[in-house]
Each structure stands twice: as C-alpha cells, then as structure tokens.
Image (cartoon, rainbow, N blue to C red; front, side, top):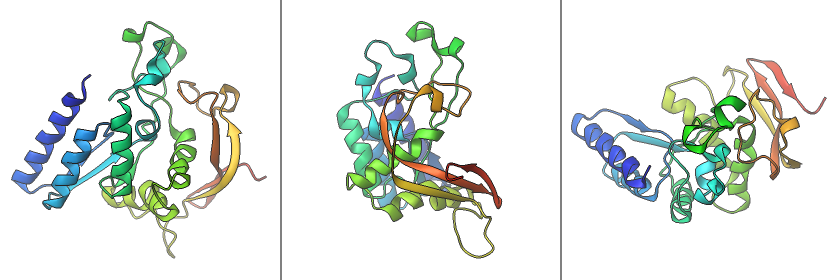
Length: 221
C-alpha cells in the first residue's frame, strides 16, 4: 500500500471537514505527507484531531525483511523519513493522541504466507515503554506524553476520564520509568503473541493499574 494511498484519503477527509465545518478524526497516521496535511489543516482552523501509534514512530519497513508477518499491519510500516516525520508531528502537537492499535491474531492467522496473513499486531503491553522512549530521546516531555495517552484521547471522545481531579473515575496507571525488561512470549499477557517487539529489551513499565477504583494489575505485590 503506497504512502500516497493514505495521504489521498487524509486529504479527502480534511476537504470534507473544511467544507462542512464538521469535526474529523484521523487514525493511525503513518506517513510524512499525511502529517504535513494535518498540520496545515490545523493551522487553517479545520476541526481535526489525529493520532499515530508506537510502531509508526519506532519501526520502519525494514522490520518486514524476511516476510515477518508479525510486522504486517495496515497501514504498513513506512520509510525512515516517514518515521522521523511522525516523531516531529508528536513533538510539535500535530498529533493529539497515541493509540495502541492493539490487534490480536491467532497463530493460524499469522503463521501463513505473508500475503495471506492478517494485518495487525498486539500493542497494549508495549505501547508505554515504546512511548517513554520518546521522552528519553527528547521528542516529548513527560507531561506531553501523559496527555497524549490519557487526557487528550478522553477529550476527543468526550469522556469524563484521563484526569486525577476530585470526583473523576479512579482510573490510574502507576509507571516505573526505569524498569527494564526483555519482552518475551512467556511475558505476553495477551492470548496472542503477534508482536514485532518480541525479544526487545524495553524500558518503562506499568507496574499497577486501577480501573474504577479496583486494582486490576499489580507487579508491586
């Protein structure tokens, strides 16, 4: 799928939003051209929000070398130029959110010929450490990253969430930014294992999650 295919559709959605005065949200942006189009639209006052995902600011199309189906997704991985453009878009506020794009698939759906394999990777467990790398690299500060992964998505969806203010839902993630671990199949909580990051040494981890006031995940116990 060429980069132009994505960017043409992004241009169309922006044009419709600008013509009608209605809001549009662009998901899973992967190209430099799409990023430029969104940035320009925001500068013109178009009611637009956009997100990207950790694999687009971490990996390039080199990850599919050898036809690794765990690196097959839609949109596909792009060039290094596109990856750098996505990172710049996060830094300058072009993107409003970081999404996990969590797409689990069974072994039967992935261990087939590349062109027959389903698109998608699991992303919930790796999204935080991969995104924290942006802070260590100086692309974002901690406050910006927290907004991109909590309050901004809630705002886009009109949810009363993503905040620690009194009376807000007690949905909390406790992070250890210094925790290092190697992401292996035996550590994957998801029932599926389709991740291109298996074997990676990652830094930063959610050590506790609280949902609705109830502890649902706890590595500190």
